[in-house]
Image 1 (cartoon, helix red, strand yellow):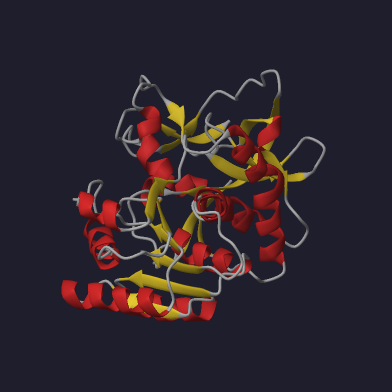
Image 2 (tube, rainbow, N blue to C red; image 1 turned 90 degrees about the vertical axis):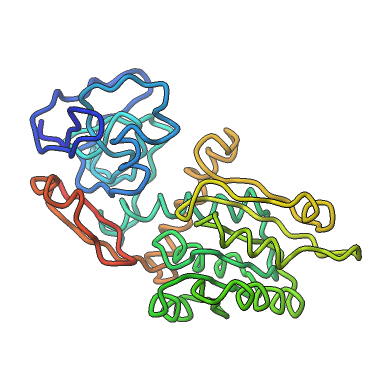
Length: 322
């Protein structure tokens, strides 16, 4: 079969022949029609993701999820660690989801990863409730844009977003954001703005996609003064601005704030099961009904080498069509 294959650690995937996967017990064979390329896939392909630290590199098909047909003709989305950007792929039978009528393969392949990076944090790590106020730090990326829409679906009362791209920030107002704060502000101005918002409408949840200095400023803005403070949950999902921060213990002692992360390995088996049985199906239906919108950039698998390091338009998910 044809597939996008990485032959050496850190090399660009090539369009090449590869052995068709063998179906093991509890697995099912899928004829792949579309697979999205995400930061996770690029990191795993380069051997730079924490989930690959203990793995020996050998030629492998890239990709962690996709959309296609079962042998009976049913359309499904699937997740697999055995590679997905190929004509054929295998997946655990518990990790496939029917694709509803009206949802095309590209969107079905692109949406779930953004759902994993937003709904899981909002629902399980932050425990979002109707009426909550949510701050999404670094919301102009693909997953951040989905987080805004899902927070609205989960009936957040107010959604504040931060980002550096002014045009993208403005577009988030059309997706459900209520207030925008630019990360280009001077540090003191940014902290003062966050502090004012928190005083006016106490922030219940912070969903973070960038970490680094912006989180240091947000935490500084939340620092208590010895009086009772509002309970806030900060959930980090990404580290685009750096993987570490400096955190004063005074902030934790004087502020009712809980810090956690959401990602592979942080969810329970029960939460992961609900992701496939309830959450992604719910978001698929929301996409069909126009309540969730996402743009894709489609490329044929034959052009995988050309597109791998190309710059994709901001806000669009790269989808490889097979």
